[in-house]
Length: 141
Length: 260
Image 1 (tube, rainbow over the protein chains, first blue to last red):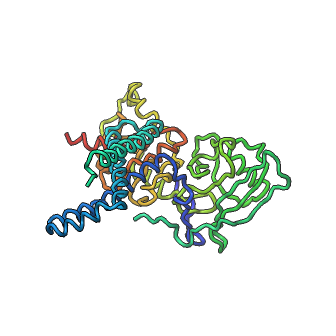
Image 2 (tube, rainbow over the protein chains, first blue to last red):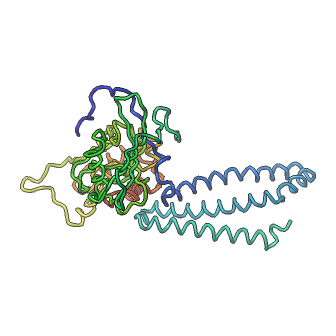
Image 3 (cartoon, rainbow over the protein chains, first blue to last red):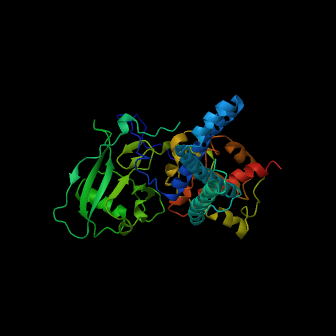
């Protein structure tokens, strides 16, 4: 182990080299990881809507009727669709992490491929969920 | 906590000096290179160099040509020019790689060259790797034994046993992987990073080493090992095609299986 090449203090403070501003953030590895975090964040925020619904339920019929009008409005329905996508992505990416934790699928090629699969499967699951909400009667009210 | 923006003194002036080519031809390329001079009051900046790169198959050749003909103050580390010393690791067009094994022809458009990300900069493209080396030293990368060596021969391994350490032992400590890792960016003082963990793995699975348990004890820590969130940037960029992510996953597995 050779000692660091500078013995004395540097003439002035060393700057920190750029990181996020120069790294290729569109790389599959970063994209799939950040998407997973973002999806998790969205889902946590989505819980607030669930909480609002539950509280209104506990408050009685009038409060529930008011909350129901809000929760079934169009902007909220768009948010549900986004939450469905976030849920689907978080689920698929979570399964990918489970597989990784067993020591499998960790080569560059495999993880590149699985990143694409996770995006594709998430879109598929979200599409099924949204379709089900729109046409099965679950979202009719 | 993740500090997404650079500290004030580290922010880069995108309009530094410009060295225009006298005559433009098909083999003229533009390189935009991070510069920092510790002896000047000026902060970091990006200089632009236009030059004929027809004699430069690799990015390192272009850097040497710039240093020889356009600006002799351009500072970078290089030695072997064949991908075995790891000195010329830098961020080229957004990915960490060795300048000597990165082909100019493989890079489109302007070529952007920065020092390895999120490191203290000594000068231009030279990062301070003191902490990186200290982390390598922390995993005690040497054979540790308790039993005496056989008097008449070396400690032998089967071919299969050797193959387990063959790849991890090929690491050249260029720091491409660790400095590509966001976990290392945000927690570099406490998370060991992929390079040091790959080295740790190489000794843990070495059948001649007799202190694997102690090595695992050393790593069983929320930061040293478990800041790895399998982002996969390490394996993505390794210029030697090694797999630090897999090594870390195997260490995590051993942490669990050794309890049963």
